[in-house]
Each structure stands twice: as C-alpha cells, then as structure tokens.
Length: 311
Ligand SMILES: Nc1ncnc2c1ncn2[C@@H]1O[C@H](COP(=O)(O)OP(=O)(O)OP(=O)(O)O)[C@@H](O)[C@H]1O
Image (cartoon, rainbow, N blue to C red; front, side):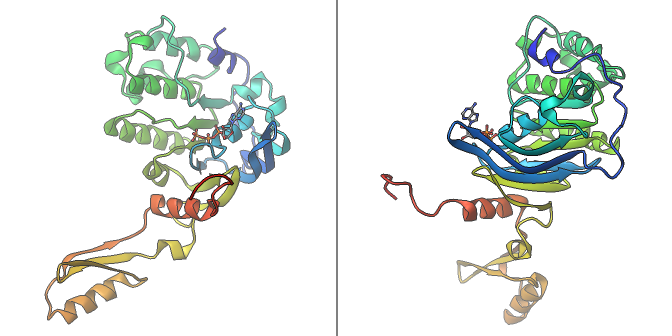
C-alpha cells in the first residue's frame, strides 16, 4: 500500500463527533527535540470548529514538525496534544479517516492518471467527494486523463490538494499547499478553501505567502526558533502599534513619510499647507500582514552573532 494510502483508511464514520464548543485542535506546551536540538519549544494553541488557523514562520521555525506531531506521524518529546478529541500518538484508523492531509512533498506519481488516482483514494472513504467535481475544483479538467508523473510541479501540487480533501475531512492540514501554483491557480485554490470553510471544515495552514494567510485565516500563530512569538486574529496580531498607517508624499523632489493614526487628517493638512494643491505622489499605506510578520520575526531574532561568526 502506498504511504499516502496507508495514512488514510477504509474505516471510520466521518461523523462530526467533536462537541460544538470543543477545540478541534488543542496544543499545550508542546516540545520536540531532535537529539540535543530543540525544534519546538513550549508551543500552545487551539483551533476551534470551522476555524482556519495559519501557522507562520521562517524556514526551519518548527511548523512542519508541529504539524506532523498533530497528524500522528511524529512523536513529541513532551506536552499535551488533542486532535479531534484524540491524542495523535494513539490515533487509530477511524480517527485518521476524519483528517485530510496535504504534505509539503508532492504526491507519488506511479502510473495512474489524475482521475484514476483520485477514484482510488475516494474508495477508501465512506462519503467521498465526486471525483469529477473535485478535478474541476482544482482546475485539472484538461488533465484528468493524464498520468500524474507527466504533470508539471504546480499541477501535481493540485493533485496533492485534491487527494487531501477527497474524503470530506473534518480537519485539513495544508502544509504549504500552493507552492508552485501560478497566480490564477492560487486564486482558484483560495475559492476552493472558502467553499471548505463554508462547509464548516477546520483548517490548519502553513504558508510563506502572507497574502494567502491574510485572505484565508481567521487567526494566525507566528513561530520563530521553535517558539510561538505571537498569536491572534489576522487583523490583530502584532498589536495596534505595528498597524499604524504611513502617509507618503513627495516634497521638493524628496520622498517624505509620516506614521500617523489619523492619515486622512494629515493629508488634509498637507493639502491646506500647499494652498489646496494635491501633494505629489501622495499615498496612505496600511501595514500588511507581511509587514507585521516581518517586524515580529525580526524582533524575535537573536541580536548577537553566534561565537566565531563575524557580524
Ligand atoms: N528529522 C529531523 N532530524 C533532525 N532535525 C530535524 C529533523 N526534522 C527537522 N529538523 C530540524 O528542525 C527544525 C524545524 O524544522 P521544520 O521542518 O519543522 O521547519 P519548518 O518551519 O517547517 O520549515 P520550512 O518553512 O522550511 O518548511 C529545523 O532546524 C530542521 O533542520
């Protein structure tokens, strides 16, 4: 049985068993060490039913390690973890059938076409999605009869996403799902995720595309160096101070800027000061999630260079 097929199973009702108010995912003081190296250090968070939570962080921050622990594919060193009411270290086949998993690495190609592979996986589940509808939802109609190994990287990634949701999972883990997607495919994927959200699916997403997190997530957690450095609503994370707008304009050929919580008033004053004339190149810029994220990660970075490294 291929590894991915082994990760799901025929059994399991797929019934929504978690209590309405129970978190779908609950992580408390999670630690994971590889030998003496601590990859995840004291991470805690919850994901509520129907919520989309984005786990953000630089390369090597510990996101995949944390997700793999939640999926039941990696042991933890310590901490309490519950996923759909179950300790993932002891999750059985019925529990696994309620999860959808899109790994960071791409699908095995084998000698199957897109439709054959999806149909094969659909048969593992009690209430799978319609395979042709799913193929259309991920934009692979024209490639339905093509061997997966003949697809481009981005097209294979779409197959990964389709395989992850074919069983109508209650909780979907998406580890960098849109890496390699062209811009149109990414927008289409966002629509697909919104339809999953509308169905009440809970989603744990990691992505390095901050606009993707801003579009899709209800809450985000930022991990750096294995620690959760901030967690909160997508419009709250980083705190109010990091979200103060900037007014930019050009004066005597020089680009000027002013951070202010009252940008419209400031622009009105600029206009009044130039006898009602529009200031050159004037714009009001609100910090994006990416700006806020970069500020958080920079402030969490070690300030001194390691021994033996020249600054
Ligand atoms: N099997 C392993 N053995 C030893 N160290 C590991 C192992 N897996 C991961 N690590 C280390 O743990 C740290 C966290 O890795 P992880 O893959 O969780 O990061 P990530 O946040 O998912 O990164 P990326 O954004 O690059 O996918 C990294 O320093 C990595 O080198």
